[in-house]
Image (tube, rainbow, N blue to C red; front, top):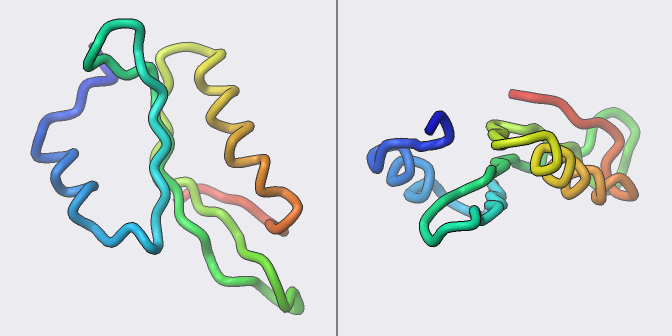
Length: 88
C-alpha cells in the first residue's frame, strides 16, 4: 500500500546518526506490516528558554486516524520540555 517505502529509503533513514533523530513505528496486524511511523528530531532551545528543546517532525505517515492520533500524542507527551513544535 501507500505506506510502503523502498529499501533504499529505509537504508538512507537508518544510516543517519540517531543521536539527533527519533523514529517510532506502529506495527501492523500481519508480520512485517506497518500501520504508521513518525520521524522527528529535537531542536535547540529558542529565545530566552534556558532548558528543554523544540521538536521538528520530519515525516509522519499513518494508515488510519487512530494511528495518526497515537503518534501525535507520543510527540505531544514531551510538552513539559518543549516550548514549540513544527514540521520540517
